[in-house]
Length: 120
Image 1 (tube, rainbow, N blue to C red):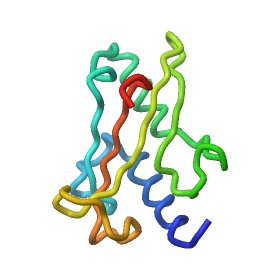
Image 2 (cartoon, rainbow, N blue to C red):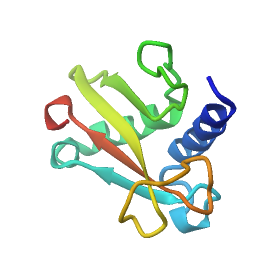
Image 3 (cartoon, one colour):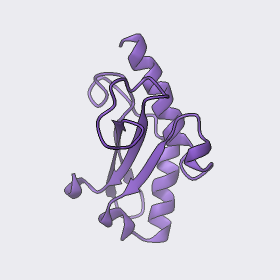
Image 4 (cartoon, helix red, strand yellow):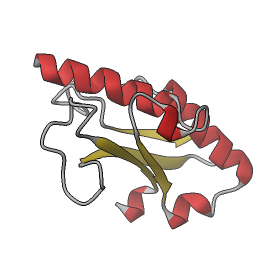
């Protein structure tokens, strides 16, 4: 893992763990949060469980996080064994192009997408 990877991982963890807690424009790590149609169609309880599992997610290892950036994950909702995927993409400040340097908070905006596996 490089020093930049460690910085990006810390930023991604902060961003993910603050979903819904503070308006994103006030966060030091700025970005947007999206859910796909499949996740939006889940019950309110399942969506709340998804949010809690995103906040608590820490199941990173060499197999699912080869670059050490904590930018994607997978977990299962207990209620009906529904798998959920999430990923973070890096954009420029206008969300038009990929970020030149995801570790630079002045140049980067994150987009975290939560989805069902069939929607990937």
